[in-house]
Image (cartoon, rainbow, N blue to C red; front, side):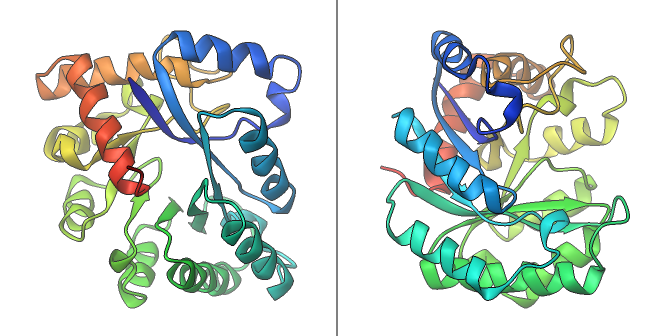
Length: 256
């Protein structure tokens, strides 16, 4: 069984064949997935996914690239939606993204911390997005004692040494299709040193499809390829990778 801990099935790229895609991934062994919001529209989009697909869970939050114009009204919306739906299992994706000319770093940090506070208030784990902001992300999480809430560092892209620091604090490391890329030497090193008990599988679909589908639309069924690569790196079977990471996902999201 496979648990996709991070995907975006409310994305418009699934509008024409969403039902077929989800039926196909069921046939590939995907038992559960978490649809993760990133902007204000996807808060409702995630709830729509939960209404239609019983194997789905959701996470609500605002991506750092989308914090321009954010207000406390949006925080209240997230609060109420989370309280009113037991299948909202996390706050996310939230964090920092310095990759392009997005919102000011100060604004990203402000709303990152604000959403960490909201997660603490709601007693939910967090899904952390960090791109080209390795130390600032770690420092804010440490400042806010976010390890108390638990969470996952989504689409992990930092060093093996930083991975060790996160694992020591109890975070899970999210690994997806990038681990299959030829130029992903650092992520393969991370995969090798991080215990399997601290890894969860994720697609971030429709993005980051694994080799040999790189550049195409991603979906949860491709996680079999990710599990095979992780198993190859760690010297275990893909079946064991799927089984252990499935249980890890349940622990991360506090599911029985």
